[in-house]
Image (cartoon, rainbow, N blue to C red; front, side, top):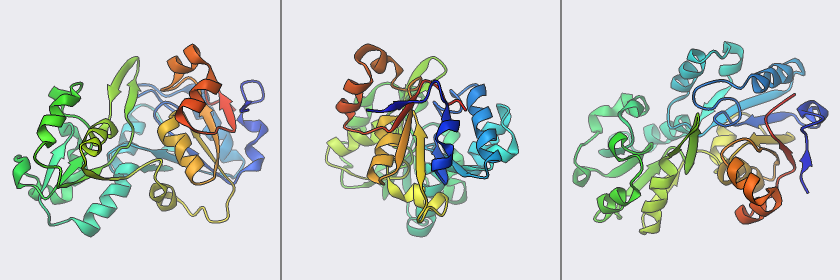
Length: 272
């Protein structure tokens, strides 16, 4: 049974933890605006001298995510705590695939991920050594069958997925993410290397967590909470995020069972 923190707030358990991994999209902002109570919570955590990481499955380098957060009004002392799945993927690409030709799956705005090796980008999937997936093409943002046809003769290639999320809510609009494209590729028999939550590497890269008591805060059961479960960290699920409609319809216990996850705490929105 998950403990509800709506009345007592995060302040009631903050002393039990050394590090907080906190999701951005769905917890701190909705893709357009910052959540006021969540920002206040981050300011309060800072006052307690506890550490936190804004761990995001954004398929962009840290600096790009930080720039976006600054634009929507976040203070530097908060946005400097960002670590993205894109940054983790970039480290891997620079180390292992820097000179290989790749085919980019995703919107053109994600170019900053491969800025340093853009000369290796090919417009012809047949010429590529690997597939770099940051999302869906702008003109093919909803039709996953398009990608199924595209991949048909290229299943032998490796895919690097920089955002394991399947879906995200931008304001009131639901959008598919890179994870949905990667899932199509996997179901066809392709091999995908994922960077981001729930996979352990991104947690370990972002901060020294050895021997620390950790709480993961997020709204996504497939990534935030599953990641916490895999690493044996405690977790706090924000109910007013990506699963809000499911939870309203089916109830929290049924939804948790459906996703095969365990949650220690729940809260409607992140609040101190």
